[in-house]
Structure formats: structure tokens, C-alpha cells
Length: 394
Image 1 (cartoon, one colour):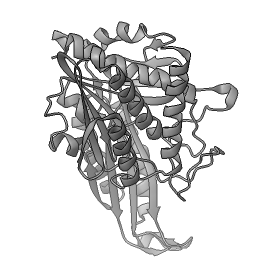
Image 2 (cartoon, one colour):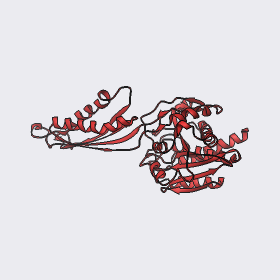
Image 3 (cartoon, one colour):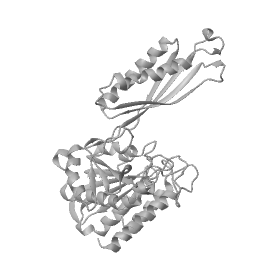
Image 4 (tube, helix red, strand yellow):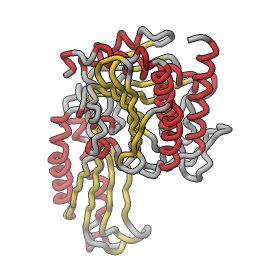
């Protein structure tokens, strides 16, 4: 592209990103964002439809025969009070695009714009998947159930997630697990309340809760292969009335994270066994509830190996093997339904103080990274459209 078109593309994607950033919306509330997407797709002449309320699906039909690529961008913000200091900071109290989904939407629109401008050389079709509620309660699964990957039938699907670990121009891609399964843990411990001066007449749930927290760590420390990953975090402890009252109940909440399906499948039994054992030892009663959330995102190994050199061929792009994280991402459902890739787009800029991780109220990203993201999305769409999906990715 000549200099003017590069400048125009950058200005476009930045303006879209900033417009979305000013008006963050939580999961399944993204009406304003959905209307912006529909507005931009209409300007490009791309047909679109709504799914699951605020989800938007657009289809670009190439002029040449080929396969169908899906490109996904999540749309929702977080219930975070923004402290980024940006001139285009959130105008909605208590809500912020602290995870970069504003950039994801803008880059997908930028890729759509570029693909439409070169439809004469585009093989197959491209399905644009603008998905709500990634941060919760989850929009990917209902979109798939509503037919987002059909009519046309998507052959492979990809997404980009901004990542403050890597500088602009860097894209992380790895075969296999990329993010973790995210399950919620709820424990209630019940005893007998009483006066703090007479503990022998009560059944104190506070020491039972403390012992439970410590004992649960044995799942990771002593019951899981140290070369495999599991995280059990207790995030809240709630119980008691005042300093001289023995608590009759304590409530714990936490999260279970894992990459491996076998490990994930055995966690509930282990938690139940440990919690019940501690309860008996302390003379209390305990209940455990696990609410299963997103599965892990697993990049298809064959597709990742096939696409890596194509990604590395882009001007200015450095491809790195990004380590898996224990964060969650409901793109997992897309990657289960079709051969899928989740890529990491570097947005770190230490000179400008853009170093804070996602979900931080101070999160900022280097907008110089956005054109690289657009190029990566276009490259995936064109590669799948022209060459199809490699046999070992089927």
C-alpha cells in the first residue's frame, strides 16, 4: 500500500477504537457498539445480521472460489473505573475497556475494510464474528448455537487478543493450549456460634476455613504433576459478626484453572474430599459447589504450524511462541467447533508507560500495533480462502 492508504487505514482504526473506548458496554448490553458495527459494515456494503441480541455477523464474499474463514472479535467492556488518563477515556462511570476489546472490534472492521477493497483477489468468503459478553456470561456458545458458523459453513476461525507482554509488531502464536479452563468454586462451612470468651461451647468456623484454604493448595502442590498446570485460588472469605463473636458460618469463593481436560475432570472430587475431610476434623459441616465455565482455548497444532510462516511473512511482524496463560477466553467454543487459532498481538510501549496488564484500571495500549493486527486477520482470511485448511487441521 502507498503511504496515503497506510495513513488512512491507521486513522480509521484509531478513530473507531477511540469511539468505542469512550462508550464501554458490559456483556449483552453492547447495543451502541453493535449499531456502530452495523453502521460501518453498511458503509462497506457488507450484509450483516444480529445474533443473540447484540452479536453481529457479517459476510464478505470474494470474487474467486475458495474456502470460508471466520474472524472473531469480542465487544464487551469490564465493570472497572478507568484511571488511564487517556483523553478519550470512558465516559460511562464504572465501566472501562480494560481488556482491549475496543481494539479487537476496530481491527476486525479495519480488516473488513481492507478485504472489501481487494475483493477481486479474495478467494472464498470471510465471516465476521462480532461477539458479545466474552467477559461474562459468555457470548460464543450461544452464537454458535444460533448458527454463526453456518450459512456459509466456516472452515477455520481465528482471533487476536492484545497482550501487554509484547511490543508492537510482535504477534504470539503457539500450537496447543493457549488459555485455561475457568471454573468457579463456592464453599460454605457451618458450625455453631457463640461467645468469643467461651470457644469450647461453640464450633468455630474461622479456623476451619483457614485450614481449608491451606489444605486446598495441596491439589496443586502435591496432587498434580509439576510439569502440568493447575491453579486454585481462594478470592473471598466472608464470615463472622464482630471481634468477640464466634462465627457460625463462613463462605469461601475461588477459581479453578487448568489446561488439561483430565486434570480438570478430577478437580471436583479432590476439592470435595479435602473440604469434607477438614470439616470432619474441625467438627463442622461443609458444602461445595463448582460452576463450570469456559473450557481451555486449544489452538489446532496443524493449523498453527501451517499459518506461522504465512504470518511471519508480513512486513514488520515478528512471530514469537507465546507461553500459555491461566486466563480464560470463550473463543474456546469456536476453537472446539472448528480448527481455530488465538493469536496474541503485542501492544506494550515502555517509553510511553503502556505496561499495565489487561483488567487494570490503568490499562493502555500502543495504537501503533493495530495495523499489524489488521494485516494478521487479513492474512488468515486470505490464506484459508485460497488454500483451504491443511489436512492435519481437519
